[in-house]
Length: 546
Image (cartoon, rainbow, N blue to C red; front, side, top):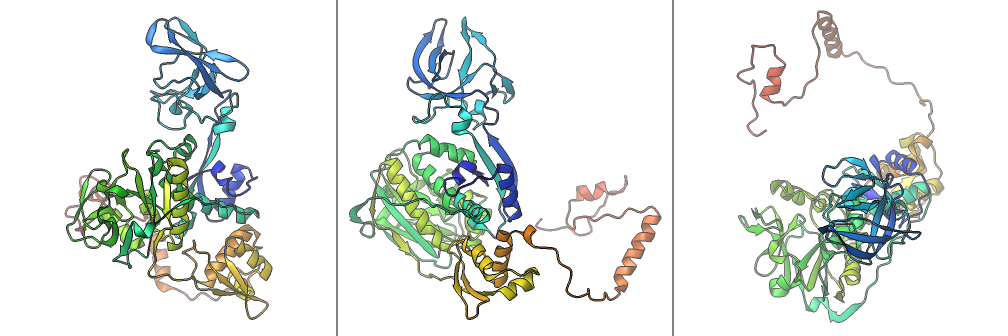
């Protein structure tokens, strides 16, 4: 999972160098596989504004844009089809290091005479800057980009590539990692303020939701936004998606992906005008039921799979991929926005069986909490109202038939000492846990505390889980090395183990080689281990369903 540093900095104050921050996260259990510096090679590349475009005297397909750089103006030769007066662009002077848009090779820009006109610089595409693979036209910067500012200061960033363990789905989002950083560095966490105006028309008078398979869908939330205009999302949003490895599509789809990356809760947008009967039913698929997904491929489902249906038929494969019959298109004007929670095992089975892995599927199958649905839904609704010009219906649909509160866990300083081998005060323990959002209440004694996990944590069940959190936040390296309180128990002799070790010693002494192989392998690999010409036929034991 890729997360930009600038996005993290919107939620917590980060002063550590990126290398130190990567080490802190890794030591706390969020392994940072790599750190990519965006803009580290953008030497002398600045923000410019096109103030004039003149035709090339010797080539119909080339133009001569004049670019204002703040302190000077430059006229260059350009063949991009999307040049417009007033656009902000990234200007690279002679000597700048860029990436060739066709070969992908790094090169230094030189002054060149193109069809008789000297060009001493260029306006860059996203691929030439290494931002994405797009090189069909010049990259247009947001209108608020300050002319003359070094591009590295404006667009430069540090991208952390994290490997999140399966038990921490709450960290598969920017807010989750920001929360960890805030706890590790002693900073506060600032979440987005979510508010938007609603119409007078209640949503429950316009759409109804029924959960017919509550074991596979614990919670289903939805909002309704009318009067939307489908188009491109703002450049800042597109750039964030690209930095995280996702491709921008349209403002509505981009917003659902953005909020998924921000909150960790997948969302799906339906064209509400295509929902027949104005009702949503979350049910098991009928055996052999077919759904044409958004990729245009018809897939046959089994009764073990979950679908989102209207009163006529399925409109989405729940948690995996939407249906083409409810897809948001350029003609869409009303959006039914879904934020639901699905059974992890069901989504895992469906995604693998249909061969449809996705970012949403990965989050669902790791077991995100049902309580994430409503905050993410409201955040996405806010952004759609702001960026797509819509109006939100009054209220939201929230069907939550099996709500379960987190049970408090009793934790004592004695238990912490028994597990970690070191004594921490109750204040230290409470401080570490509250920094992560845990609720702590005093116990019956001065050494005990009742701890309730926050709604976003699905991995906390025992006192030992809490102790692990204490150790992570205080720091494993802060736990002092201590001598054992008592000697190790006497080891009883193991005759079989001794015989194996002695046999191995004797055989290697005679020139044999000892290897440890995989239990399951291919016939080809087995034959490579044998001296020719002695192929291993037949195979001693062949798997019928490898």
